[in-house]
Image (cartoon, rainbow, N blue to C red; front, side, top):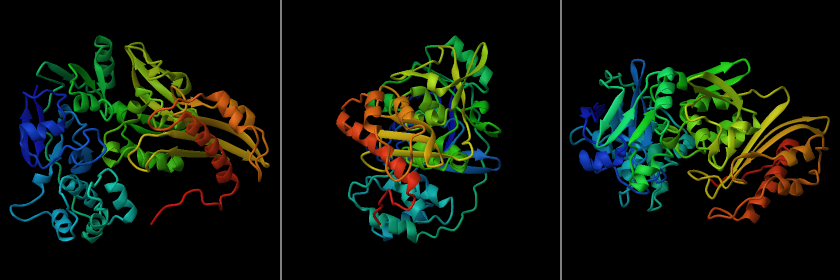
Length: 467
């Protein structure tokens, strides 16, 4: 019943701590590794960043992760490094050394997380400036010390490092219970479905980037939880003839390359979902299952006419995502079913996918409005259109009135008439702390006009990036 992992090279078998204790709390209060800091406790600031390694064949793949959102049970079978585990005796690790020498540390509160993000980045070898900025997007420096931090990253000798041999995975069980909690770890889809049918009240845990806020912010655990982390069927990525199939437990990080190859615009969006720390844990099935009205992937799934596979005691069934989403955080998932996979149909010849996200900041922010369009233009007219929006209703929804107005409309120098009226028929957005309803209506209209520009005037710059 113990949770077993390697922590800074030391074998740990933890049988007393609650499985849903956050890794951050465990490191600081049980292991007294206080270099890992608590800042926001919700996966935004990166002060709690640690490196989590998993065996891939004979080698270890390291990824940065937010310790504040990870549950202790998620570490089972993993290798973990904190900032205390990098130095060798009195000799600093090169990442630590160069940050110190380049004045990349100021108050120092955020520094441990920055060190760990750069440590993981260093494993990839020779990153360019874009990769450096992406790696640091999940680490906020409160002292505005970004220039010396980036300078330090550039100064590192980013030669590809020798991969670390995988240490034999520590023994683990299919159940972890302590402090009044029980977390179950089925090994295959059949066992997962059986457990779900037996315990419909249990919380399903995939990446926990959303659920992790409950123990982190509300200080409440999960008395009974079922994890999808060991179910191989939920981690498959398959390029099938009729579409790209992603298992429900496939993370954003693992899906990025195949998704970007098939749908470049979707890949660009994935790079803006949280940070690298979030994308290492968050899953497609989790994003769909939570059915948030601002879930980033959902409008894209609707625009692509994606299907979801639901597995239950009676077998599996496929249904359109458009039918699966039924209301505010509500779905057609049965109480004894789990999401098994998502199929993304390929674009037909002549079709384009355009995806744009509006938020208060470019990285690490929740969508205010997100639009996804699948379009085909023929002979100067919009021959077909599937349009979907997030942030405009109680759930991500198709803009059916807009589709009806624009399909077949001339698609030339001037944008068609009726865009604003059609969107007003499709959506009645609310005002909240992110934006007013007036802003959302105007933003949605402008995103349709942006679609027109992008598909008729590719020479026009649609974004301005500061150097």
